Length: 120
Image (cartoon, rainbow, N blue to C red; front, side):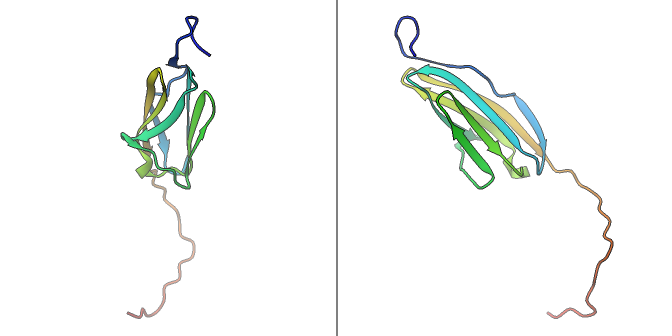
């Protein structure tokens, strides 16, 4: 897939939302799409550092898109996420600020056992 003049090219075909708010425990799914010749190679960064894969962070790359999924969000997952697509024609990127908030809940404890003595 080259442009009409037969040259290499790269361009984004979708952009990440500039800012996303989530609650701790939810999930986020980002999808980044790019067209290019030769086929683009995708990578992700968080706060300008290559994203480390962890049990709750998954990246799936296909020919013309990459999907980042983070499940069971933690406050520490907040930050600026950037998708980078690269080929011999250059590099294009799109980014999104993810804000995770913790929602406190009041739960009633129905039954609490307290030992009579505590050993140290």
